[in-house]
Image 1 (cartoon, rainbow, N blue to C red):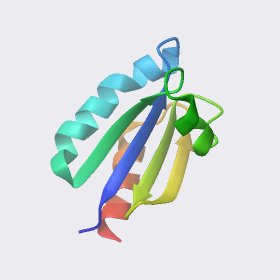
Image 2: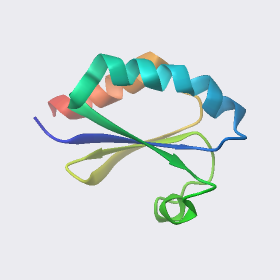
Image 3: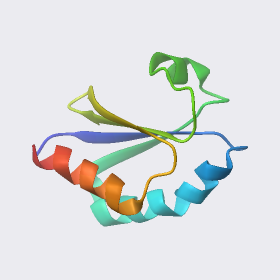
Image 4: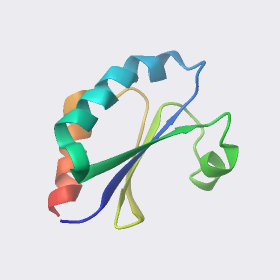
Length: 91
């Protein structure tokens, strides 16, 4: 199985980010060790946000084997995120 990572770019002041938090936690519980989730606060880690050209929050970047394979911006449904993560895990 390939190494899948989800980068979750957020900010403390971001309302939609707070809305997504329980969804991300559910995904983390469901997928367990098959996906590594890294939360990145854009206010305290501006270099990483800049490296990935993050302009809006929340932004979700999916990496497979260390390479960016997808990016989603804004509030996403749990089903959408799960489908993307499972797709890249299987491919």
